[in-house]
Image 1 (cartoon, chains in turn brown, yellow):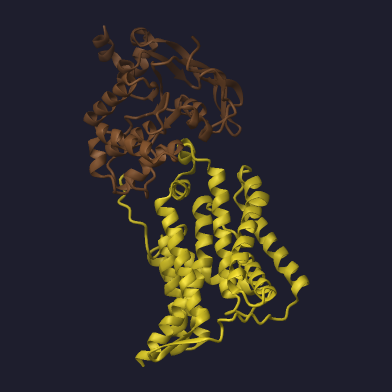
Image 2 (tube, each protein chain N blue to C red):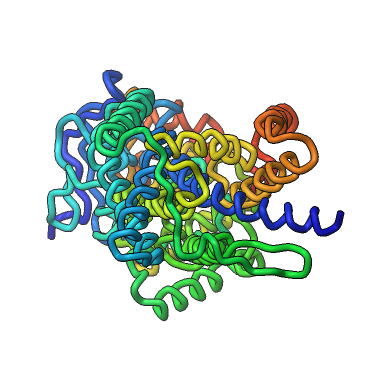
Length: 245
Length: 293
C-alpha cells in the first residue's frame, strides 16, 4: 500500500530566501509522525508546503495517490488535509460556533451534518460549548488551541497537520492537548506533528524526522530516535536521555 | 424649534443612509484586501447615470433605474477585480492596485465627460415632488424611498454577513486570509464576491443619490471624500462602525447647515475625523476584543 502522504525532495523558499532542501517524508494511514528540530530548522515551512500555504520550488507532494504539488490550500482541504497553523490563528471576531462552522466549510450545503459535527466537537471540548457564542479572540490560549483542533476536525480530515500545538501553553493544558491528539488518531485520522517539545512529540508519535537547518538529518521509529546521540544532545538533554533508557 | 430639530434629523438620516451605501463598499473591500478602491466614486457616478437613463427610457420607472444601476455596479465590480486587483495581487506590491484604481477613476470620469458633457443633468424621479407631511415636518417621497431602500439593503447585507456561510467566509477572509484558505474557502472567490457586492452597493447608492446631487461626471467625487471620512471614523473594515459613522456624518451635515452654515460641514466632519484618529485610531466603534494572544 502506498503512503497517505508522500513528499519527495521538496525544495522550499520564501521568495529568494531558501528555507528547506531535499525534504523527503511520508505518512502512512493511521500513523502519528513527528517533525522535530530547533527553531528555524524548517519544520513549519515543511508543514505549510504540505497544506498548500506555500508552493515548493522543486519536488513533489502526493496525497492518497494524487499529485497535489500545485493544488491551492482550499482544494487540499477538500481532499482531506487539515492544518492547524502555528500560533493557532482563530478568527478572533467570529464566535466559537462560527469558527467551528467554517472548519466544516466543505459540508456547508449540509446543515444537519454541520450541526452533528459541532455537537461532536463540543463533546470532545466541553469548554468550547460553554463559550459557543463568545468571540474566539476572547478565549484563553488553551481554549483557542482546543478551538483550532476542533475547527480542523470539522472537515473530517484524513491527515491532520499540527504546527506547535504546545506553544505557549501551561504544562497541564499541554498534556490535555496531547491526550486529545492521541484520541483523534485512535479515531482513524493520521497525524503529522511539528513540535518543539521533542519529549512529548517522541512519546506521542510512532515515527519521526529530525530537521536541522532545512534538511532532514535523521529519521526513523521514535524509540530509535530517543536513543540517537544527536537527538539526545540537541533536543532531550541528558536527564531525559537517562530516563529514556 | 423642535420641528426644526426633527426636520433636520430626518434630512440627516436621508443623507447619512446614502453615505452608508457608498462607504460600506469601501470598507468591505478594505476589509478583505486591505486595499483602497479609488474608482469606487466613479461607480457611484455610473450608477447615477444608468439610473437616470433607464428611468427616462422607461418613462419614469425609477425602480427599474435602481435595479439597473445595481446590476451595472456589480458588473463594474467584477471587472475591477478581474482586470486589476486579481492580476496585481500576487506581485506583492501594494501600491500598484491603488495607482491602477486612480487610473480607472480618471478614465471613467473623462469617458463620461466625453459622452455626457459637463452640464448637470436634472434627474427628477416621479417621487421628487410628492411630499409626505408628518406633524410639522415633511419629506419628499424620494427621501422616504432613500431611507427605506437603504435600510432594507443594510439589513440584508448585515444578515448575509451574519447568518450565511458565504458571509461568514467573507468575514473570515477579512480577518485571516491564509487561515480561511486552510478551511477550504477560496479567498479569490470571496474577494471577487466582495467587489461585486461593494460595487453593486455603490451603483445603487448612485441611483439614490442622482436625484439629490448635481448630476455631472464628477458627482461621485463629491461624495467619496465624505465616504472615506466615514470609513475612517467607523474604523477601516468595520461594517457596524461604518453604518453608525455614516448616520452621524449625515446628521452633522444637516445640523451644521441649519445652525451654523453649510460652509462649516467639511470643517466639522474632518475635525471629527482628526479627533477620532487622535483619540480612537481604530475607529469610533472599536470591535470588541479582549486581547488574549
